Image 1 (spheres, rainbow, N blue to C red):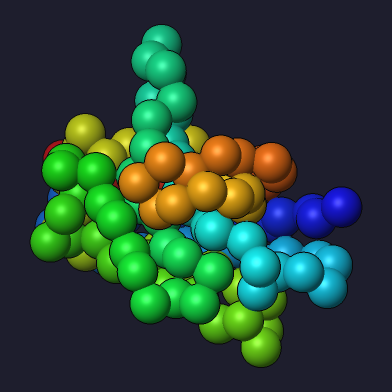
Image 2: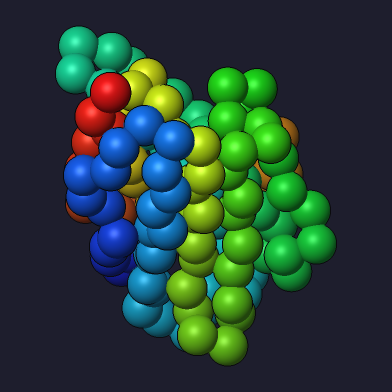
Length: 121
């Protein structure tokens, strides 16, 4: 069993930056593919980024490529999402996820509770 707790969301102006963190419990963090997803009001949850268990492979949605960076620290059992050049369309609840598979085809086993990111124009 893994519990995921996100933090770092908040209000930022367009063009600004935020760093989201996802702290995991349990002893098997380093075996999981970690991912970030987001859900805007009235829309389906969508994939944002994923990172392999070792951290060596990353994959991004086209909409965030070049602006967002996913990373992880297995010693701290924490995953991160660095978000730069934020746009109003990035505004959503961001969810951390842990699972298996590949960064391109991640199968989510666990979800965090979500953290709100609000971008003002």
